[in-house]
Length: 295
Image (cartoon, one colour):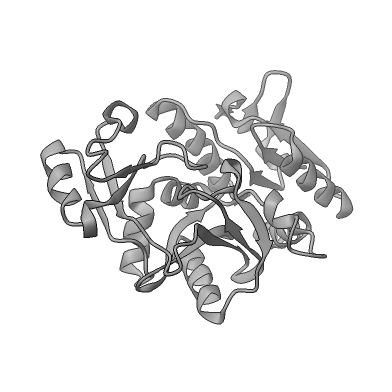
């Protein structure tokens, strides 16, 4: 039995279930925040209506992990660690998720691996926030929550908006340079990497600087350059991921990696990438890795 941890039964989950069924695999969906760990002679996961012995789980696909308190988030990740300790393939695994969900850690890893990423300052000191803001060209930068997605909580700090929403950021201020496209376009690129290969890509073009599909950006077919492919693959490798959605922007100094997503969406990408069914490619790789782990 294969297990999908998901927060909903929407399009992405249905795509994954169909891909498992094409491979004649039994699959079950559960919410990780409804799982309990049982450690005794038969280690298992307990859910509201059933229990699953770890010996019956062939592999786990992580489609969603909810937010929560620090303790709740740690527990959800501990569930994944628990599975891995029993040699169950988790795709992507807990360490990958820990590295990518925290923007500070991602930036540090990309930097130490010589992967271009925006100039970044991080502080919990409001006085240093003011000092660092002055280090950016034109006193303009982007302030982001270190945990977050889909453009939520992003602010431009400049002479008109000098202070971010302190309460929303929980006293940690993550500042990055504002990347201005040489042609003043609001455009970036998503490259989808599976097993160290770029299998699909798209351009996202919008009408505002928060440029993602949830904010109305349009998806367009795109063929990446070899440089962009190398950036996406090296970013995925540096974070140890089985698969990833890598976001790349173009600034005055060239291409730079802005995000590496360990639980990426691909609905918009699927709509423009042609014949390849992305869910099929993901599950094919996952099943191969699961079989290697059990052999």
